[in-house]
Length: 377
Image 1 (cartoon, one colour):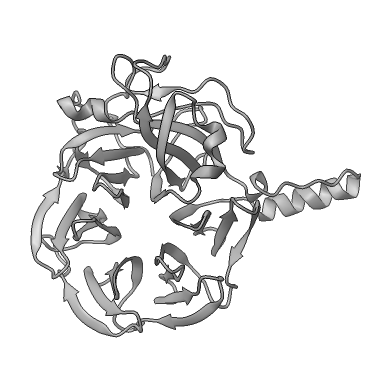
Image 2: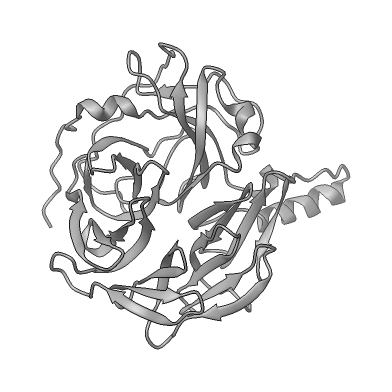
């Protein structure tokens, strides 16, 4: 097996548009130290790292004082530990997290400071990704049951949809009355109505341009462009919603703007595309035209460390509950939630926005180039 090449990042002028923050945040959402932004001066930052957490108790802590309370609280805390998060979605000041190791979907309600699980073990076995409609209807892709579990806006189970003999749903995107479902085993995208009836199929399994090899995640842009992480072929493919193949985003490789193991995808209201690469431990950020803007992430000991990032969600509804962590010199537009399958920081929270100061001091250097060899995962 040839050793991947190491090269310098080919930064474009647009790199100044985005930046990454890395601040100190304990497991619980307590106060943090001086915020740090990217890129460093004289460029203006566009993202601030706010915090990371790995336990639901960060949002609904234990208050017992006796030794028994301490023991019970510790056991409860272990049960509420986030172990291997994959997909994540946000709605109405809540986030929903698919934990592969716990075989459940956690939720955190920031408005009410509560947390818990969605559904029960008989309804959900191996939840990988979750998508939420504007009305609060939730669609959970279960690769073991080979079905999509549907929950209403009050988290009540409604039904399961799909055909377990035809499709293994791993990711789903909603566009109007249609559900775009990634079939990881079949190497295709199925388009269903909301009752689960198959309407049409996009792409096929294979290695040629426009074909899919172990697709895992997808998103649809405001311009109605489908982005699908073609993980087995180290690429992000693009289609229109009728299935016509478009130019891919980036190429396979180890340079910035290229992919090794792309997974989670999120697209903001202006069409900016975020893509997780779980092999390089990076999140790469692209313009709607496909131009690389910047990437962030690294396996470090810091609170902003990333270790196999897999899921992304963009949200405005939770922003009021995180403003206390946003620098007074930064105007946040939305939050970015990031999941890591490994490492100590399971859920990271960042804010995208604009600096209202000409310069904001930072002590962290520019991101390093991609590693010469892939991590051992």
